[in-house]
Image (cartoon, rainbow over all chains, first blue to last red; front, side, top):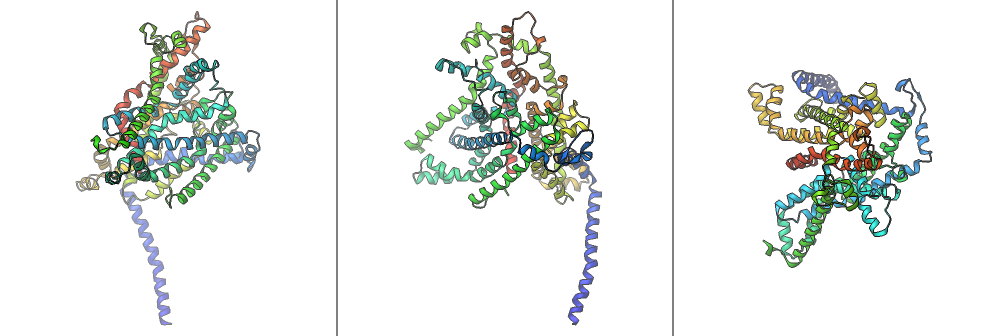
Length: 326
Length: 293
């Protein structure tokens, strides 16, 4: 009984003590902020820009649930619930646009993912540093070409009178409508993307391979392993963690496919495959002025994207012995 | 050196080299073609392709492009936007990264979370556009510079770099009575030239090559950057009629519009082509620092 009261009184003592502790903690923090106000001045511009240009638009995204009119403003417009989303999901375009987005991205990921790895493995075999440097210089270069120039070059090369069709005409007698035929859009988009990005994407793999312990290779060589066997059993396992991260990020970004190149490559003829969600958002939103509907389509896309990221991360974690992105 | 390899290995290495050589060709041929084509007479180009006969060469494409007002304006605008964007984004990133690199900075986790959330969630195209419009920034340079200036990736890169600066240097300066302000400007920044350079180059090139923000925020053609001018030449096929005198027949006009395509690509890529070989290793470094997080 005595012990109980003793314990009780100690607890009573603890409550003001804790409050005091918290108060001194807060005091300490405030003093820190006062003494180091300069640090807060430094970070202020970034905070202000983030709030204004990132968080306010996030709040603005609620127009997706409203019958938005610019006159009434965001707050004044009436709520309509999921009406804008239903309108998109039930529109006759939905299936085509959704599948075009998914296919373009998915094929791009599947075809584009292994090539930088293969390039890195091959570059790793070049013994002379000067030659390796020059090959890298060339392979990285397309990364710095603007998307407008890339698409411009595609249009020049693939036009009915362009150099590629000159050869095609010579062989078959008739030019191919690369730019107007929807069947070619995806291949051209993805292959030109690989042409531009594969070299640059190989950098991290090349660096990872440079860190592989040469002793491993020497030992394997003594055991009679040839280059290919060593690539498969030494180099590839060394790249595995990086591959997992790159793949998760790529797969998670499937619906976040860029607007810029697809929009430039669109011609009225190839729309069945070239109209993807981001270009659709731009057209109905900024060109046609249907802000709320367009915001809903954009939001729908982001939500799918977040779900994809989580799912892919989960799957890769399972396959990769617990090593995921997070 | 070569004795190390077995016969099998040497065969594999040769095949490896052949494939690499092919990869280099695949990258180079289109680029070289464009450069050569930009010097060709368009009639020859259309009928024979690339010719190495000097009499088939012509500088007409370059003459037309250099006389083109829109192109010149675009060039100046692009330099303005790219330099302005690089300065703002680098300054903001460095300033934000320094406090975040200090141990015991009160509020570090809160600010970091606030930044990182924006990497995964965004308001989207339309709400951002409406905001820029409401702020009255349409058709101003601010629409190009400010919305994209906050780049979380840059902040993380700079913070990682700052953390790598030995803490004793801060301490020594502090003991000498220097304030945070002095430490940042006199100790940290002078040691950070490589990262400043990397961030600035990335920002400059990114802005130089982009067209999207300019397309949605700038209606006024006088404000258009180079990429939008290029887009009208290369993709929309619209040739400024004032550019070519009226007497020229339609066919001639088409020929010339083909011609300026090549020269405009070369001219617009010139700043990057000149910079690229010198700066390649810095760009590479940027990727490396980024991948280490």
